[in-house]
Length: 112
Length: 114
Image 1 (cartoon, rainbow over the protein chains, first blue to last red):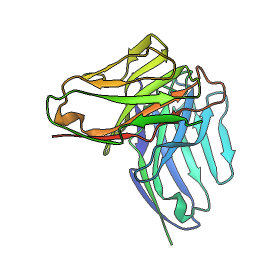
Image 2: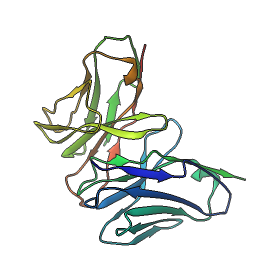
Image 3: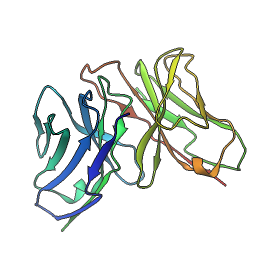
Image 4: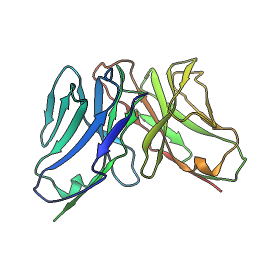
């Protein structure tokens, strides 16, 4: 089955700096790659996703890049703010927004 | 719309007890899934369903049963609870395929098995 690895497990940045979280996947058939943000005690919420027919997608301060050949994808957050502090999960699946295989998460802390 | 709802929010069980975690959605989504979340492990898929009457196993199905008699409901049953099932359980739903919509998660059920 699919295996998703996520790095780093923790990331501390100063407010205004950029943050990058990287994930690799094992199944070359995977074609849907969402990123979720989870605040303490809350449910995961989708922040951005990308499908294998594009290499990059951007939404304001958040961007995701995908390298199908290397089987890795990354989340980029620019101009970080304290409210960006949370745990971020990458995931992968084949032709569905369900049946996701998740990475183990990255705890992002944005300090003032 | 209420979205995805789960009950109960919290539950304490003794080893060997059984219980059902309830999940319902009012978005007419075909797909529904159950995940468990453990510290350092991310979310792992337990069971999923692609429609009423159709269920399949995920990554960690042992010790759990599901059924899908209606589009709206997808209960998760623990037949004989074990301490290893202490976790936070999330139910999720989505439309079939990749039509532009995402997977919506419920608020979660925190389960402690003593």
